[in-house]
Length: 449
Ligand SMILES: Cc1cc2nc3c(=O)[nH]c(=O)nc-3n(C[C@H](O)[C@H](O)[C@H](O)COP(=O)(O)OP(=O)(O)OC[C@H]3O[C@@H](n4cnc5c(N)ncnc54)[C@H](O)[C@@H]3O)c2cc1C
Image (cartoon, rainbow, N blue to C red; front, side):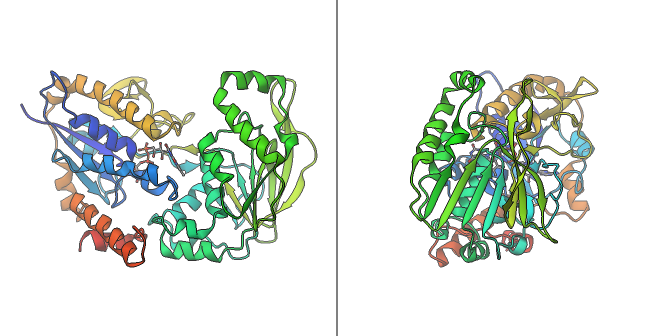
């Protein structure tokens, strides 16, 4: 029987879990499978490498499990290949029996307030990208000089991540893989106050208790919470009863709201019922006009008074992610996801044979890393059920041969292995376990060395 050839677009957690589920031994299934995993980056693992916070080493260890999938001889890594540019989606659809899209959804949402584009205001995504050593973000991309006060807009785990990285002693990050030039900038930073703004109350905040608790454990940081922000309405109480995990967040917040300040050098302020009405400054952000909010009788969020100025030199918006399209792949403009039924892509409302979607670009930017696994397993179940029909279709030109004709040389698993080893070697030379190689030139040169 000829092998079922599958292209996976995006080597993030979702794509890797799709590949893993495809090669998993299964009872009663005799279909041999060959999987090509494409990524625009020369490195695999998507946001696990370039999003998950560097000071969360346990989470980062998941790369080991994903690496085992890459080591499987039936899985081929094709890094440094931008699908849509180096090879088109139509070429992949012609050259493989099935294509699974897992290209992620990590474009940030905007605030939609005046002054949002002033220098000094940026997405939390771009800040994460910078401290994660992503090759799209040069080390000098973030300038913290002159920043004493930072405002983080949003109360999800990403907001907590960036607030923590801004506040925590840089010595804590020296044991991580954060690139040296980024560490130098963080070490030179004089950030003393970080304000986190949530437009609704503590019951609606999206952070999880584990992430939140860490904020209270940072050395040299006082956490400041106004007890008035923690007063619950009857509606909040009802919501809380349905989501008991939120109660643990509240316990922590209540404890912090009672803690006396210790005079620590940095303060992390958590505000609820507060949103930015505008960002102001002469050529760059100097202040945020912060508006208090409340729910009106219809449950709509409205301003509770005139905004008041909060001086700040850096604003990071962290109000959610969204997917952007890939040429040749349908995108639902309302949800910014690829429309699908049970993981099968829909074109004009009908299932498009041989096209599948998994991960954030399929279900939206929700869930934890493990959610991508169950998601991918479900998608692969459908794909393998479709295998007899998919195998019946003759294949067009081999996309890997097309890449060669175009002078595109993918970074293969060995090339990624050289990057991996290079990062460990560079880190060890500095007394660290690893330090990221953070430029395109350096990554590609190391991969091809
Ligand atoms: C800042 C941040 C921190 C997070 N921290 C945690 C955490 O601590 N714990 C947790 O459980 N979850 C965390 N998450 C969520 C987790 O990262 C996601 O669930 C997961 O990464 C989604 O996987 P994905 O494969 O769908 O997308 P991604 O991880 O975004 O992977 C998509 C991949 O597709 C590639 N790609 C994009 N376009 C193309 C193209 N045209 N051609 C080829 N390749 C392409 C990208 O380079 C990328 O490698 C975090 C997310 C963010 C943003």
